[in-house]
Image 1 (cartoon, rainbow, N blue to C red):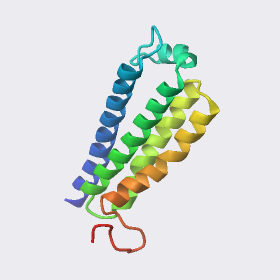
Image 2 (cartoon, rainbow, N blue to C red):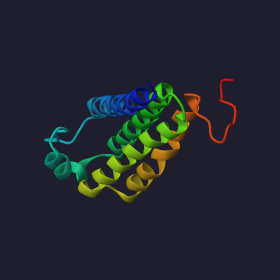
Image 3 (cartoon, rainbow, N blue to C red):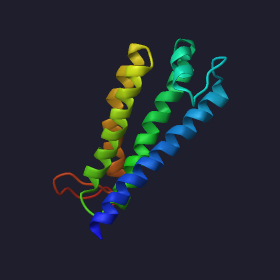
Length: 143
């Protein structure tokens, strides 16, 4: 049963984080506006319009990436039967690799790239801590 819960923790964590990421991304573009002709479902459109994104659009994107990671890590750690922090950090690594892949395809300002990549694992760690994950046998936050 532990193996099923472990697999479920990773899958549901990735799905939950992706839903939050996408939801915030769409909401931020709806509220802040998007460059004319930008289609978030078309990688070529995103690449072609990346230079037209405002600072507010980029901050909304950062928020989407990082809160998606936080929620995904939290969910995975909550579901994981043991070693909750490992699962949280695995979700952080998943989204970090996704971020690395995305910035290899889509041009972005240096401040955005550095901030985005630096925050994935700390937010995954925070998600793990909030879900009761521990490092080296320390007591959980809510104990």
